[in-house]
Amino acid sequence: MKCLKTILSILPLILGSMAFAADHEVKMLNKGPDGQRMWFEPAIVIAEPGDTITFISFDRGHNSQSIMIPEGAEGWRGKIGQDVQVTVTAPGVYAYKCTPHYGMGMVGFVVVGDPSLNIEAIEGVRYPGRSKKVAAELIKRIKEGI
Ligand SMILES: [Cu+2]
Image (cartoon, rainbow, N blue to C red; front, side):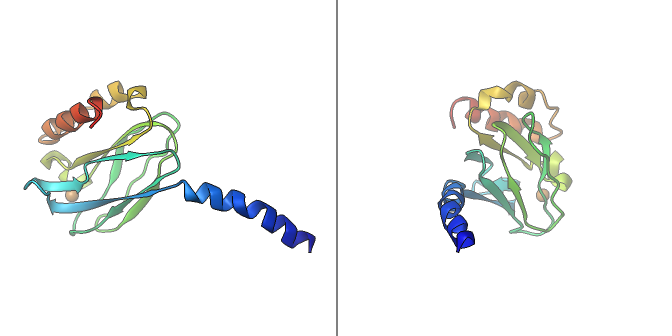
């Protein structure tokens, strides 16, 4: 009986913490909504600490791998052609890529809380090929508050 009481007393704490964590879905696409080739949709996710991001293998041949993340955060490397779920805890901006299509502009960002914490480091990344232009446009939007 004591055990049940303990469970009942901590249950609201468990449910409470779950209720605030949202999941954000990002589709990995061959073609974006504006005709972009090789695209994460949405390319910018606004999240809160504790939220999860699920990268959906909508079209084949893509993955999601972190490039530059806030201090104290954990990086990730999804397998090609598979969904991957990431929990974002540390505040700041997370930059990630699709490994095979990075040079084709397949790059994306997750903003957790205040982007100014590490936006300079994110801007300092040497994005290859078409990602340079795509990242610059997305970072501009992040700085302008989307
Ligand atoms: Cu890809």
